[in-house]
Length: 332
Image: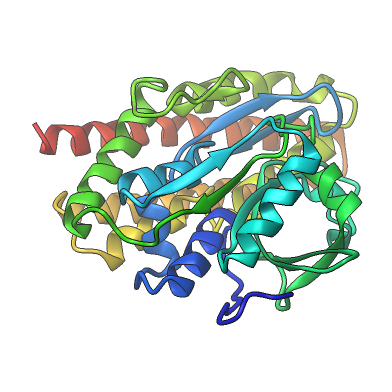
């Protein structure tokens, strides 16, 4: 079976696209950029990994999807850690009741990605099933994808990046419980507070990685050691992808936050929108520096490119700190 009335669409980031597809299904009237901002979607987490590429970062908070439903006060249930058979039975039951199910997975086990790189959590929607598997609405693909059930089980039980064990979320009552203007301000303040003081916001960022501005600063200090890693060119290339590809929406997710500010009527002033736009552009410039460095002909050029990118990111961390503080000051 497939859900009646579900309209699949691609987008810029897996989490905000899944939320926008839910918004269209439930007639909430929210586009992807608005969903991203309402989810306090801008963030940062730096990871040190045991395996290749050994270093990674992501410019969104791990709580993005959860924050969206809490901020808009949409009744929902989130599950994690359950037995697979019970999880799969519940997912099918929710689909039978006419509700998409938001799943969290590792793209390594999603066969249609055809990748040998682990990356999790990747957000996508279950929109149907049959005897062989599940139908998935994935932001990266023009058509709904079909995946065998055993591969979904593997994808939802990953130990890469952020460990997953059968995490999924369902809407129980598709009604917005708060005023949109209130939600816009609340979500933006939560974003700024979490970047400045990770763990000081509504959601615990968890023990995996270094979060917020501290994560950006850790990235900068760690980059000096990248030439000593087993495959530094791939580490740098992956860092470029963390800025401009892999569903970031451009500029390490700062482009999505910029477009949220441009889309909604927010109370923080044009200066905040303009500075967010400039920061997004400059993160994209960092991505270009990293891409060029990864293609260097020798170790000296690679090292120089890494040093240049680290200096650019250090300056961006200072600018972001000032921007987030200005948002908090505007609410006091």
